[in-house]
Length: 71
Image 1 (tube, rainbow, N blue to C red):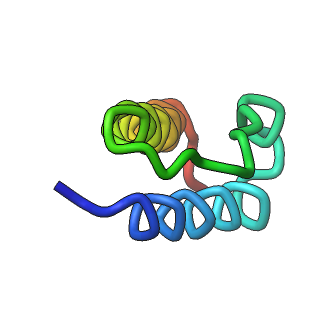
Image 2 (image 1 turned 30 degrees about the horizontal axis):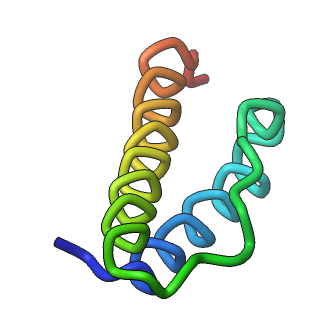
């Protein structure tokens, strides 16, 4: 399992990619809380939420690429 820091970096990378390469998809990007609690139980939950959010961004790009017409 990736760390919170790794997931946050992955999210930054993919959202930057979306904003630069597919600006029309930017409206689907949710805002994530900036601060994450240091408590273990909450940290595990936040890790899971970050991972789910990252996966939703990957799926957004995947679905968009299926419908995009290349010329």
